[in-house]
Amino acid sequence: MNGTTIVASGTVGNPGAEWHVAGNNVPWTAASTDLLWQSDVSAGVLFQNDSGEAYIWQTNGIAGTGTGSLGNPGPGWHLKATGDFHGGGDPDLLRQNDDGTAFIWETNGASVIGGGSLGNPGPSWHIVGTGDFNQDGKSDILCQNDSGKAYIWELNGTAVVGAGSIGNPGPTWHAIGTGDFNHDGHANILWQNDSGEVYIWEMNGTAVIGAGSLGSPGASWHAKGTGDFFGNSQSDILWQNDSREVYIWEMNGTNVIGGGSLGNPGPSWHLMGVGDYNKDGRSGILFQNSSGAVDIWEMNGTSIIASSNLGNPGPTWHA
Image (cartoon, rainbow, N blue to C red; front, side):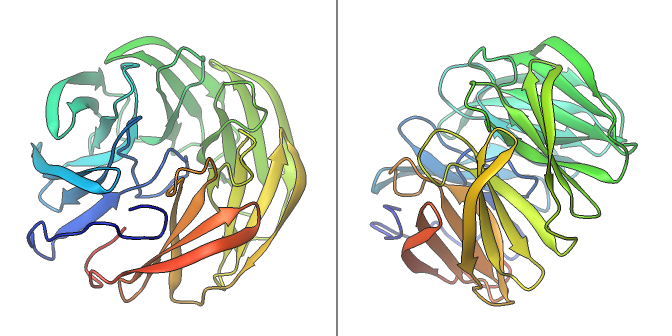
């Protein structure tokens, strides 16, 4: 991809209907099945089969640079997120087993070059996101328990170098994802209640150093992700209503300082992810239709500056 233009394409074969696109997003941070596979110079699409096998289709600018299987740990393992846990600028894959065990695969291109188990917090703990909470240049892991309790693991590669509970907002509050809302270089946490109310916790490592309610747009509005839509190095919040209307809140810390509706692509269009697809320093939005069709909106603030349908891989393929 170059923006919303497919500048090169080619079949990589047909793995069958049981293969699903696990993600092609930039680092964004919402609770979703979308996963980032992107380094400073290259990006790729990450797939996972129902059998558990993972597959990468690498790209570098306008050129496809290769594909490769990352192996198969078994159907009980699920790709949960990506992050730069080693600080080398390349993405690593974070998996969690049905029994709760967490595992990192360190990758170089389409090759797994290392990895290790992070231990097992138990099946009631769920990995919900990654972010650099302690500003050491390496990704950390955010988990939430069924009870609502949240926990951070600070990482150096596959070693847990720090950890701590960050409190329990209760089981009706759900960690949606992470983003740097106050531009201090630390990942913060975005929460949404079943009622619709939204809350941000500003973090420094495992310490909550600030927090605030953003209000409630109503239970029919769902925070879908975070991204820098205005190019100011601060995260904003992306919403979609049950009707499929899309909305952006421009953020400064815990204050909503602007925003606007982007319109309604229609009830069959689902917001799947956020990423800087055209490398202009601003996040764009990835949609997929119930039919399988894929569309990108390139954004400048709340203005859609380009939109393009990327084709239809069919309804059995999921972005």
